[in-house]
Length: 443
Image (tube, rainbow, N blue to C red):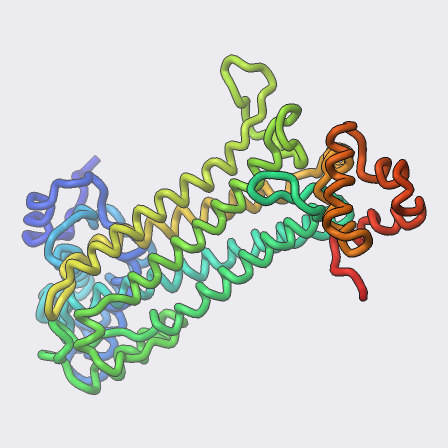
């Protein structure tokens, strides 16, 4: 078996020597998006008659191979690197140039031809915008499935009345369906929030080159390259109104990181609630039954731990950490360029990837949750918190007396109301009906 063909060259080799940090290569999500940006640039330069037909065709062909995953092993720079992404840009430029030279039998230069009208400082942020848009769409699809799972369970559990809880103490009744409906609404709101950031990601600094002034580019290139990238990607990219601002201030990625953190925290909060509701099952709340995925313990037989809910919390911790890294990287930007862009790249892609997987796992778990209807009813009957509904009929003080007597006698509110001849049996039945306990009352 022959030796592997190497298409990268000296600049990539220098980067590999200089940045032996994490042992992990830059994400192929970025590489493939960057290859699409290179195609858009080559097409535009050809259209403007700056690139010959032979070179144009060969560069596009090489980039297509990258997008198809045929050259994945050629991208070797460490995910943690200095230089604002220059090493990544050099890596792809060298690979494209050498592969295109093979196709065309014409010498194609990695900077003069492949990098024509470009700088690391505009192509890397643009590629990251495309990555974010693609991964965001994938995450939104996964969230939509999760929201549907909660909505479906809300309908399934609509008649399961149970104890509500505030401060983790008994509170007024609620249905399990209402709880799951609230989770559905939170995810819906999250989807809307995330969808709104797309318009910010669609404004690029492509054509601004080094610092946004457009040196070695042109007004026509800036306009046309964004149009061509839109055609290639399916996203409607436009040049920023201020390319200098868009080059030095990458707050859109900070915004994206914190929206992902908000999303992760919301999912983790729901997962924490579900863990509580499933706790026990005999010595805890035990109101819902979680699916069994694996043995919960190596020493306690038949123990079912909420492992897929625990992992959602861990996903949130990772996403929070990534958002904090992005905030520090944003703060470290100076003057005309934020040189910490590799941190943005790695952190955002990692957050997207684990959120997509985490939300899919969460959705599968939710669809398999069952209600312990009998236990929910038993706990509700034992609780005295539904005394709040008595206030409009007998007042706060009288209601408090009934609660005290029920607590002292270890009896129910209904029995104390009957015993004290405070309300009739029919009225008590009306007051403690499911609809009366869990919905606004008619005046």
